[in-house]
Each structure stands twice: as structure tokens, then as C-alpha cells.
Length: 233
Image (tube, rainbow, N blue to C red; front, side, top):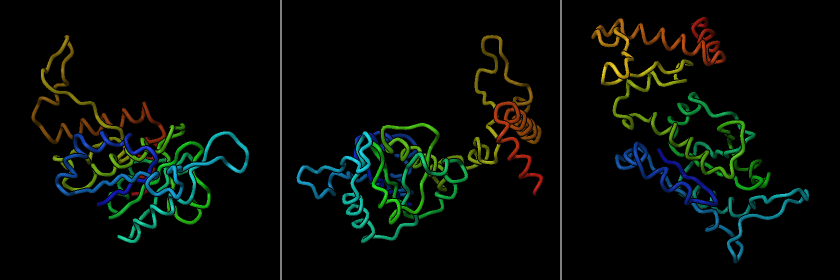
């Protein structure tokens, strides 16, 4: 799988993709991540990538030419499954979308900045828009890092224990069960006996019930989705 990230401040992404699981995924050649500096594709002699909006509102807008130049250059080399703009207007990113993206081969992530990008880019190039939540970031770089991280870990071979992915929060509209490790007693607080029993069948049943109750208590919206899905099946 390959991600091409187009942005105005590539330095923000340097550490995100050079550590931990994402780093190892690249070393294993399970994913390729390339970050493209929009300033390199500017037609302006000062490498300017933004300008004032025609509307007269405050702020700056990313110009269409650098974005067109960069995407055109990339599309000469390969076909892309999606050109995704990280935007507050987009559908809210979730585990289901991450799973769908993990099955793609080539994806472009376009990061906005300032007041966004020229609308003509959205109309003619962007195939999908994604938001990571109902709040505003300085730019789309951090949103791109979130999308890449959540998606890459779902690629087979990236996470050592693939079975652990099956019980991730949101994977089946349930939150994760509580986790414990050694020591079995800490500050007079004990690990539930069932988890020490070695009875794997009962442990799975216990953890599933805990996930259901936890979701019901903390995320009623997810709990309703869980009930509806199981009702349909």
C-alpha cells in the first residue's frame, strides 16, 4: 500500500512516520509513505502556495496551481484509488473507513491549511473528503497522520498479533475490555479472578460481556449500533 501526502508543512509529519509500528511497517515494505512539499510545485518565484480569498473574508486560501501540479505529477506515475481531502466538511473518520482504506493500493491525502483550498480543486480532483472530528486544526497534516496510523495498522503483517485487532475498540461497535498485567495485586487492587483462571472460553465470555456493558455505559450511540447489527444478523 502507498500513501502520498501533499501538504504545506511536511516537517510536522517527520516523527509521525519514523517511529514505532509505522516505521516497522515501512521497513517490512508493507506500506510506502511519501510526503510532498506543496511549495516545490508552486509556479511563484517565491514558492508561494496561498493567496487572499476573493470573498474578502479574513485568512488565506491554498492556490489551485501547486495542488494541480503535484497531483498531475503523481498521476503520471501510477493510478490512485482515492484522492482524499482532509476537511471539516468530510465524513467523520471511523474504524469502518480505516478498514475500507486498508484494502486500497494507492491513496493521496491532501492537507488543507489556513482557510482551506480553492474550491475548484475539490470539484475536479478530490474523490473523497474526511474529517477526524468536529474541531478545527491549523492544518491537515495531523489529520493525515491519524488516517495513516489507523489504516496502516490494519494491513496484514503490520501488527504482530493480528488477533488483537479483532477486539480493538470500534472494530465491532464495542469498546475494548479492561486490560491488566503483572502484578496480580497492586495497591490492594486485584485482577479479576476469571482472568487468572486459564479457562480461555470463560475468559472470552467474560471479556465480551464487559465490552458490552462498558459500551452501554459510556457510548450509548455505539451500543445501539451493536444491537441493531446483531438484530439484523
